[in-house]
Length: 130
Image (cartoon, rainbow, N blue to C red; front, top):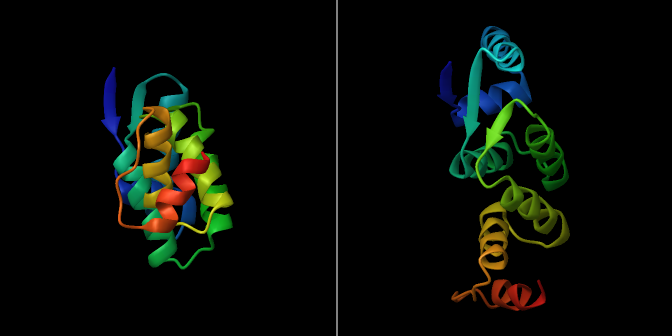
């Protein structure tokens, strides 16, 4: 069985649907995964890039970004690296006035029972609350 790491632009095309030909290719690949013919993997850094792309290039709101990333997290055919961290990140992203990268950092701090070393006082204060 073939295994594939999914790139940022693939997820963006899937979510945004701004290229019909590529969207069709993605849907075909996902159907193959659903049928058990291939395995699809999505890494944590790619999810971060997707969030940044949706915010900076497509100008989506935080609420829309969280909604779209939840759709990705709920796709059982994708094997998502540190899915629990991503789900926690989405919660922080919706709760606090922070960017996705900071929320991802908070999620990692919490999961690994660490302290945060940062010069961003707001971020440090929030890290004490979680």
